Length: 144
Image (cartoon, rainbow, N blue to C red; front, side, top):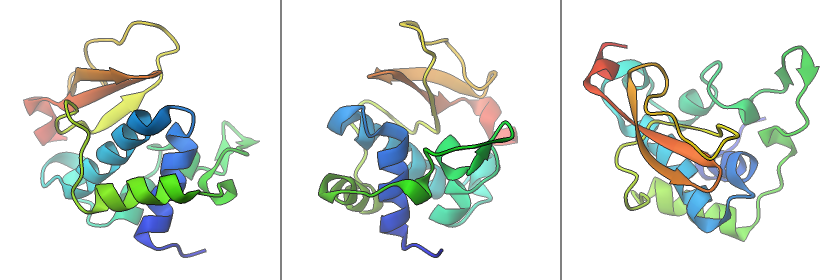
């Protein structure tokens, strides 16, 4: 099924951060759009929002099967609401969460502590929003 960029981003926002409130959803939208707009590293070789979202192994919500099991929490099962579309439009128009910088990664550590680097040494901790830790690229990222 083909979705517009706004629809696709609204679905990934709802799926990845629907329970994280406005700030959490804005942070996830910022990371996705930072990946779309970067010109360096592995994400710099991607050109479109669908390429970023469907890049293999990046967003669990873009996968229908995880570890050999059907993933019911995937973007195809999402039903975005007005708030998800509003955040998607904000991010597409250039909006970014203050303090997040150029973060390219986020993950839930299931712990109150965010590790200093993720993944490996290409990302440095920037900000925690709700359950997610966000990471800005280091100079090592440019070589990916």
